[in-house]
Amino acid sequence: MKTAAADPVCQRCLSFQPGPGQHAKVLWYDRARYVFLEFCVENSRDVKVEIESNKVIFSCLNEDNVQMYNEIELFDKIQPKDSREKQSDRSITCFLRKWKEKVAWPRLTRDNNKPVWLHVDFDNWRDWDAEEEGEMALAEHYLDLINSVKDKGAPPSMDDLDDLDN
Image (cartoon, rainbow, N blue to C red):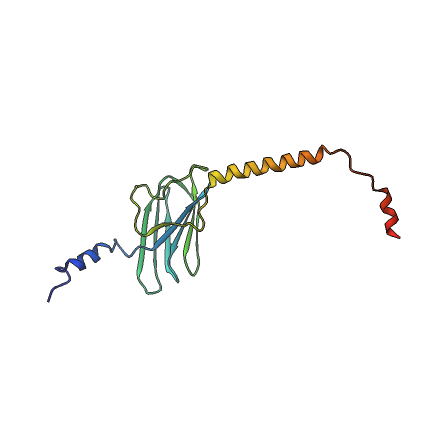
């Protein structure tokens, strides 16, 4: 009978067990002022989120009493004092205030290597650079529309509408 230490499959499985616990699945997306992280752990307990200027450390117990742990070295600096987290039954969401606003993050982590537990939240992802350009074009269109209405001259006299009251 083989022991777990001698079994190469068990060694591979053990290598996926990071530090103090398992990794939670993390979804992230980028906005002009904030980066959003969602740690997907249902019915979490003992949640601890430590937000530093260049790192986020997350830990909790899941509903099966398994310790979850993530440590993320961020792509760029954030403002810890203006960053928050919110816990729900399904997840823990972090709102990380960017140090440099209106600068797109091409990735969440400082390293080019993406961890297997980290995913882009495509349901919330938007190309906000292009969106701002589109909003500016739309605002200019409405301004032109308003100006064209102003140039139509004085409104017609409505003196004859008094006859309709009878």
